[in-house]
Image (tube, rainbow, N blue to C red; front, side):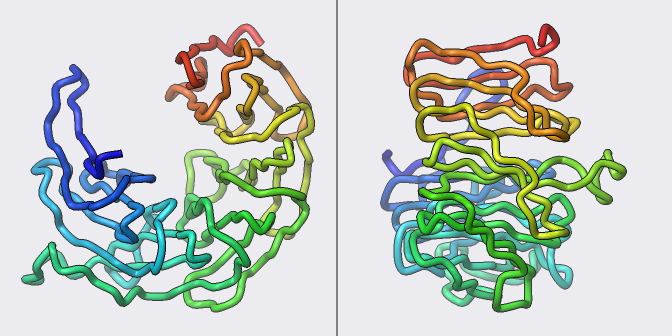
Amino acid sequence: MDGIARLWSREGVLQHSLNAHSESIFSLRFDSAGKRLLTGSYDKCVSVWDVRTGKLQHKFEAHSAQVLDVDWKTGGYHGLDVFASCSTDRTIAVCALADREADTDPAAATTTPLQVLVGHADEVNAIRWDPSGGLLASCSDDHQVLIWQLGQSVPVHRFSNHTEEIYTIRWSPTGQTTNMPNAPLRLASASFDATVRLWDTDMGVCLHTLRNHTKKVYTIAFSPDGRLLASGSLGGQLNIWSVPNGKLLKTYNQGGADIFEVAWNANGTRLAATSTNAVTLIDVRVI
């Protein structure tokens, strides 16, 4: 909450303290190569850092209120590295990094993004580019998931099936540009209405509504092969679902401690869940 991001080695040694924000950092994201880091803050700014040196490369101030999430776009745009950010100001800003050879002052904030996407009626909680970088998904307190394409001012799809705030979204690691090109691309959304929904963004339809949670769902994660989806909620409930048919495969109770994050290991054999008082590791090979 001090406005500083810290980079650590695998051995737990502090490498860099990244100090450029004047308020709390709410989101951060490494690029696919692990060379750059985005930090989004309540000070309305997004900072871009060099991971190796810990130096600030660029600063963006494209929002009028707190930044809630950031994400890199795969493949960039016209040769430039691109990311998106979302805010409590109800907008999404798509920004491009300046030419790496350009002589720019990293402390001078850029205020003009490539594009500002306006379509939500309330604060935008999360954004995610799909694996190809062709589509951007966003979710909001307005109960909607929107699908965008860079260069278009209106959403490709508007999904309004949830009945309460949507806290997070995730794309499956599948589709033509991934290691599993024959598996269809799916989008999952987690809501305070205690449901998770799976979407087909090609057809623009909800494929499955996953109902078993009894409280707000804060976190979801696809397995590395895209066949399983984990979801965690308030009250300590952790569910594992089949993505192809939407069936519940296993449910765990974390003793009432609220779950705020779930993550798979690289080969999909273990699942970690962080709650208010513990980190739990589950061997999913016994499902």
